[in-house]
Length: 194
Image (tube, rainbow, N blue to C red; front, side, top):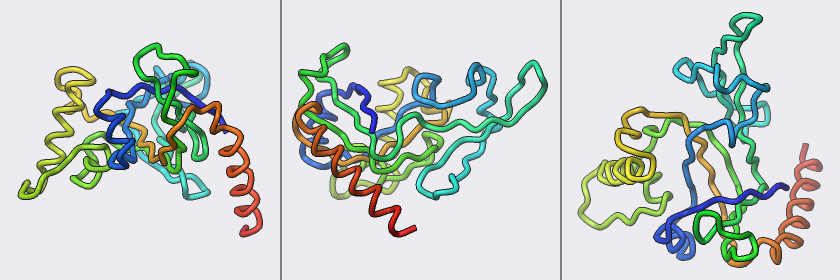
């Protein structure tokens, strides 16, 4: 079980507290990805395909990569795995000791940012009102994505890691011992099943 800092806007932190935000999308980048040393920059994500890991719970990206030894297919996986933790920074550069929300990762998937529907927009914490037309949530999320990641970021349709999580209120350092023992019990139960 590893922990990582993550920054959210205040409105998204409120959505996590009230239970309406249960997932987040983050662009695939060298900082949040497991790859062979030096291959991330050379990987051609335009040719990438998603493949499910042999355990079925996690998806990875396979992409062509031009290395000095020739063309090769590399597997790109997320650093953050189910069971890992995010501690939510109150603001950029915020301290771990000041965190008040801890996210327990339950699922990780690779997707294109545009591979979402209104249900995904709601899971991202957007409030959809009665009478909205189908696709309206997705359009609102596209505007939010451009606001956060720059003009036309939605149009690029980048690869993202989709993290689904459970929210725990409290500082990660206070919650860590309890969460670690639960993770250990969960791993034992999974081993018994297999």
